[in-house]
Structure formats: structure tokens, C-alpha cells
Length: 204
Image 1: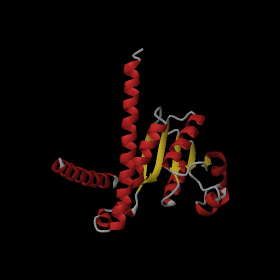
Image 2 (image 1 turned 120 degrees about the vertical axis):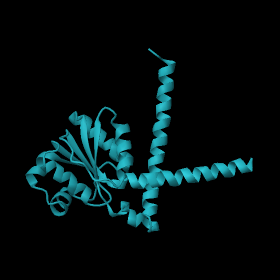
Image 3 (image 1 turned 90 degrees about the vertical axis):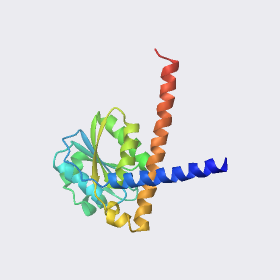
Image 4 (image 1 turned 30 degrees about the vertical axis):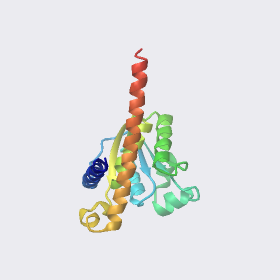
């Protein structure tokens, strides 16, 4: 019995390492130029480039409105839009919404879903850091299943293979994100199983 447990642990460790390696390689992809969408959402946290990229896409008319989700409640509109992002006041007034209710990625997804439904948006461009994109995309897809979510990842230094393969801090950052992504996928599988059981019990 102990030998089976040992082998199970070894196989699990190998599967985790291979999965992590694939995850780290997969997130290092350049963003493709997106077609026009209904709206754009940029998630706070990480680099300020997430937000400036969202503003740039809005300026390029890739969407009619931009939501910046997860803005700290102590940060004023002027501090973020004027001082940090240098946004044209006319663009800010007409087309940028600041969401202050989200404190994590799950909150970002809920905040974005409510915003999208309020505006009846069915196609969104999602902007966040490259290593954060799989989890953010999965959360938002679960929260807003009726919409198409187009990923627009912002490249970071953390996903540079030369860095994470040699720096424990960088590898740990990506590894933590990979674990969180696995948790979401596990939750998604459980929810899908529950839905399938309900449909089987009530085929009508």
C-alpha cells in the first residue's frame, strides 16, 4: 500500500512539473491584434501597462467603452486617469468606467460580468498580464458564459524563459499562478458535473 502511495506521489509530482512547464511556455505568447469588440476590460494589479494598454485599445476604437476593474477605493479618478494614465478628459468622461468593488480575480470577473450585462455587451477584450491571463479568462468565462472573451495579454518579464528557468522567485510567481489556475479548472469541472447531473435528473 505504501509503495502505491509513493508511486502516486511521484506520478503526481511529475504531472505537476510537466503541467507547470507547459503553462509557463504557453503564457509567453504575443498579443494578436483584436477585432473590434463591444467593450474592453483592463484588470488592475501587476503593472500599470495593463491599464495603459486598455486605454490604447479604446483610443483605437477597439471597443465603445473601457472598464478598469479593481481600482483601489482610496485612488481618485483624477489620480488614476489624469496623473497616472494621462487620459484625454473627454475620453474619460464619455467612455471609461472605474470599478472599485473587486479585490481579487474572482471579484474582477463578477464586476466585469455585471458591467457587461448592464451594457448588453456580448464580446469583450480582456487585458491583463500574460501569466495572469489563463486564470482571468477562465474566471470571466464562468461569470459571463454568454459572452465571447478575447484575451489581450500584456507581456511581462516574469514569463521570459531565461528568467523563470534560472530565478526561483520568478518560477515561484508563475507556479503560484499555475496552482490558482488549476483550482479554477477543478471548480469548473465540479460545476459542470453538477449541471450534467441536474440535466440527467430532469431531461425535460
